[in-house]
Picture (cartoon, one colour):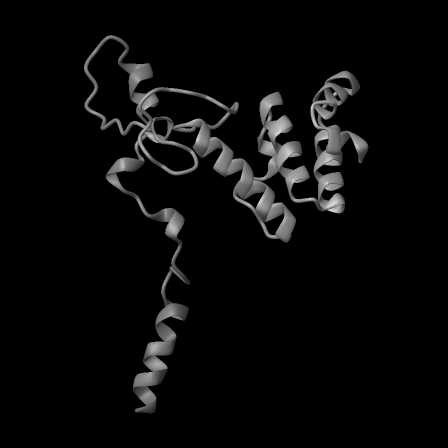
Length: 158
């Protein structure tokens, strides 16, 4: 039995491959389509093209978008309700101290910043409201920041 264990343990030591790397796996879908297009402009290309469909789905609920409404720069939402749910989810994660898949930094529109302050004020937690206000302040110039802050009386008082 000892001889069998020794021969099994020597397999990795004697072979050229000392381990396994998942990065070395080749699949038929790993081909880069634009290399083939650069060589064959105007001709038919035999390479498989796999389009990205992420722009056709809502960024938050993954439902198919019926019309393209972009509430944020890099994300598309299926409705205003879905966008608001995403804002609330982001604030909830920030308040609980957990890691969020929707950090408040990703919301770049002025409307989203107004809504973030509004929703933070609804919690009636001054420390949390101040945390959101300071986060938004760090990303805006003074005039824009105060124009957004003046929209919310409770936020302005803090």
